[in-house]
Length: 253
Image 1 (cartoon, rainbow, N blue to C red):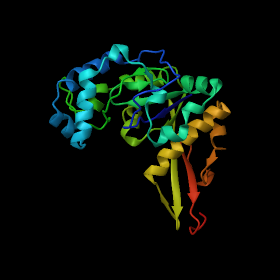
Image 2: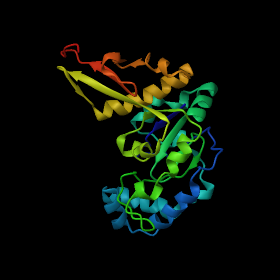
Image 3: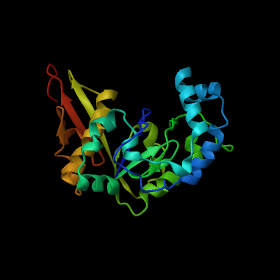
Image 4: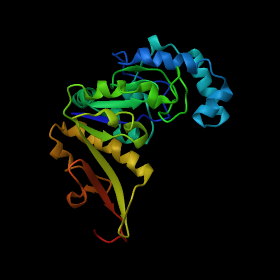
């Protein structure tokens, strides 16, 4: 079983006490992207990333100084957005770290797919960025099925905790592999609503739960409960599982 999760735009510039031990699986493809990005101006990066000038300047500087062959930050500890804050990998014990190294994969617009101990550089490149590379109109075309081939090789089931932006880079190529989609929603007066911020938190919480409990059987995931979210069998289908928070003034479904 593999678990997929999205990266975050916010990254840490230093991580103490952890050393990366792997080269990313698709680093040669990353180098092709780097060749394009490192030649772009601040203005071009700003347009590509749809960000403010200060963020564009920061990432321009990153790409100018980047040395992909000597990256040193483990992917698991490089990201510090909400999902990773609530996953809290820095407090994993040895067995929990071993669990996520085996099961967790981080999807990335720049690296394609990352294992937890893959060495990464600081970067910004969302999968949905309109970046033309070698005649490809965007990153979905550029990556094609290469990310999926790494993810689904010899796998029977994948738990999808990634956003739609990232999961759509692999789902068209899943073949016979079963993919379980977890949906975190609130029941607000009888209407199921996804709150993006809380969904990110819950994805991180679920990875932490699975690591702590060394989850191997899919059915165990249904026991997950955190921050008021609980599995709802009657709302779920075989491959789409709903975890629902009942708001105080909302009615029970």
